[in-house]
Image (cartoon, rainbow, N blue to C red; front, side, top):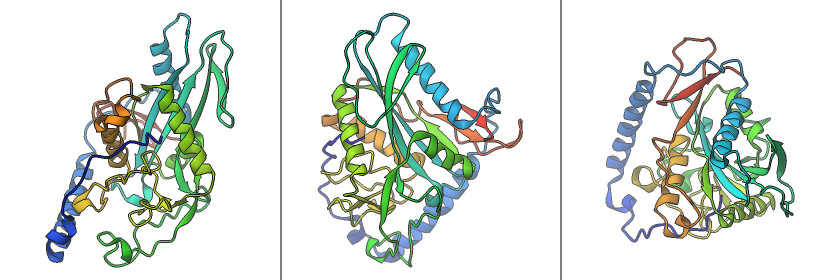
Length: 318
């Protein structure tokens, strides 16, 4: 989604100029150790729902989306088009950036018995007499499905200093939802879903504009986009869901974007949606990014102890 919002004003002295290098490096190591401990703590005695264990992940996810949206529409006549966003993230137990991703599906449910103008190039379907069109923004290197070796940081000091990162820029591709979830299944990742959240037609149109921009080939992909996002040369997956014309804050330790990937990345986008005045009019309901999380976690066998960072989740194995 491209809400084209204005990020909060961040007129302040860069943290990198205020804190000595040895302090930054020490704290970076400390935060890494704390995150590793917290990742292990994520494996709690939270038992996921195994009732759909044999149902493929893509089918589980789409069934949940359909059920949630149908409940919102009710059983009566749908007199107008309705629009929804479904944000996602996936990550592994260590939240390694190479195995993390943020993406978002956007759905338009068509009004009943009205002449309609469909959007070219979107997926179309019918579910229980409700017609819809949908698309997903899932920005990755164009060959990621056959070459899933993502370069995020390469070179000493590259996490702290973007000019030291030797990772190349890549042509990008926005994968569809089924393709994206297949990537998660391939590496047995935990998948987080938020929503669906209802948005305005304006929000939907902005999402279509973002999809068209990504499909145009004018913007490349780079996981660490700190040097390239401002001039709209290359962006990463969670900035593909956010604004390009206004500099989106990196977040993370010292504003470097550290650990702003996977669930943290999508959560940051949702917080920005909630806190930015120009997007509030597009989002028609409140977002609680922590309470609204629903997980899908990999478990080879029922009643095992899988990585489960969610309070509520379903298990999948394929």
